[in-house]
Image (cartoon, rainbow, N blue to C red):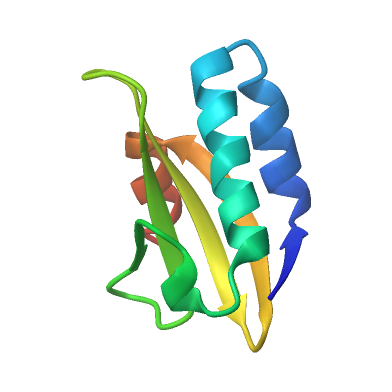
Length: 95
């Protein structure tokens, strides 16, 4: 599978630059996505209820810090769309 990044994902990642634990987990997830041959090879992914092609992966840093990585599956390409805190993520995907 091919992995591509949306501009908003890159901006979200830059905003989270000062959080080493989070960045480490994000890069681990990106490696797993790149090495996946099918969507079922990506650990921890879940389809969003309202959408058929959008998925999320939970990233838990601590009891109070929870993030979500949102991505779109389009044919054989995964588009990393957003990386946001839990509350902001579900506000964004409410549209």
